[in-house]
Length: 154
Image (spheres, rainbow, N blue to C red):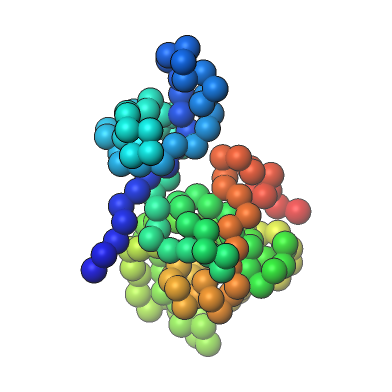
């Protein structure tokens, strides 16, 4: 198994020479909760630890990386939005609507944007896999830090 382990977070500047990078996303290896080592810049970058996002190892329909806390649009429908999340979620049998298991892993949570997205079974979390990305024509349209308005209920 060949999986790329990456993180991204927003840079916080402390050196005048890095002032133009303030608030910019930096990617690399998580050095500790305050630093990411950027392979591109070959240095440690001070980061806002509240914005750390892990790379899922997956790509959207356009080949763009999907990160934790990304907001994804499904089926080319701006009302069909989900957020990429890592953690525990329930596996629900659709016909009976009973919880049959729980798993830990990458999944997406539905963002309630309209009446349909609030209805069962459409509001259930689903695994974030290549199969679901292709079937739903999933596309990254933002993230919860840069686009918090996309998380707001309409």
